[in-house]
Length: 359
Image 1 (tube, helix red, strand yellow):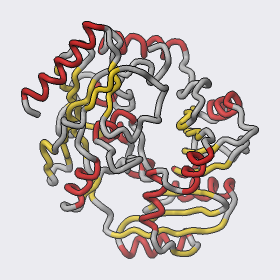
Image 2 (cartoon, helix red, strand yellow):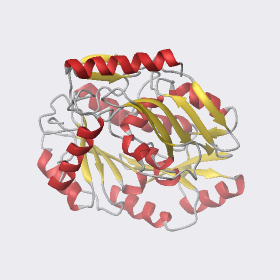
Image 3 (tube, helix red, strand yellow):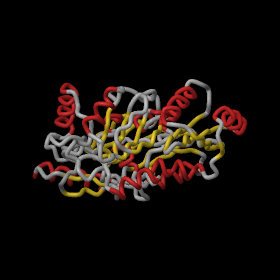
């Protein structure tokens, strides 16, 4: 990153802090729907773009926050590697900074790791305009507090991401997708059973009475695992998993078209299926459930069920966010959030209220 570009970011933040003017940090804008609705001056970070360093032998890529995820994908694929978190793009304009700021992972997450698991280091401009670096570009760099992971999923409320280092993974040599008919409860039982066996499963999805299972690895491993999973072969499995990852699958587009609320339920994988008044798509061996709300869906019931099953519920997409986007925090955790915000952004100007309305 050039000194001039860095100074420009610092000057913008410092001016906003002095004037107490909220800033809405935006890269490609593909994730604007996520989080509480906020207002302020748009701060475009797309000019902070470009791959800074990529060492295939170390499985590490470092890029500026405004770099298109598609450009990183292309660079890694040319060397037989990928971003293992399989993060959703939500559009061609998706940026590396947005990927980390939202902290969302795709279908491969239970088997290859989440964004937070793979992040190595970040460089940020905090709410005072200071240039700070945390972590590093190698896995063995673990000294000090793990602030890099703290920034993952913080939705830009603690700092403006300018540069990110992330671990890469090798691309699978072969992949195949199997599908079989079964109920949601049967799918949960089967995927948890398979999870305890040495099967090279890299994604699962149950929708409308069909269970889809992706298998990744060597040709003999695919053959052996396919025989154990059963079902039939899906011809264009790659397109199917991309549609689940990027929410172009009809389950998600139906929610957008009907303006129905879309809930993201993160629970223990063994939680039994529960009818919550709408249609569900189940990923991650049962640990992630996408609920398109129906007329009888109740936000309180949804959150109570998720919490009772070891997790939480997020109002992922909705025209009406009065129920709160993110699961209510226990008071000690809420206070910790407040203190972190006050430390990194004392003027409260960075994406103010995007996580929770009052900070």
